[in-house]
Length: 178
Image 1 (cartoon, rainbow, N blue to C red):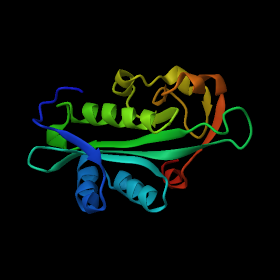
Image 2: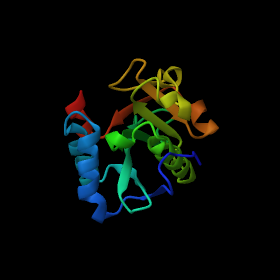
Image 3: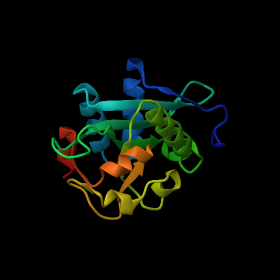
């Protein structure tokens, strides 16, 4: 696990009691409340595959990550592929660049792999996500509403690579971002 500047950081699954603290965290981490509304909607429509929080030694939630289901096309080799979208990763502004997001992302990707997810997609900073293995070239094999250098993919299993290229659809709440 990554060493952070936040002592005794614990990563655990989201619990219903975390909802208000997570909302405040996401709003603080982004310039608007769009991401907080996205997570709320994804959570309540049943589209989240995994949601985790990072908690400091005092019990304060200092980071959050959410993954939602991405649906492969109804036809083709990859129709049974398990695909998730990472969005968003949030850390309190005063704790950013201290390893919280890295620890949270690495931990959650490992849990996704253990749960049988095969491919993870992200639309995010090209300078940040490649450290976890996300690749813009691999994402070019995924046809959907997003494209470009900020759209990246990470294969969690070698088997999924044989089923690419693939066409996908993101959970409906993402339409607010298109």
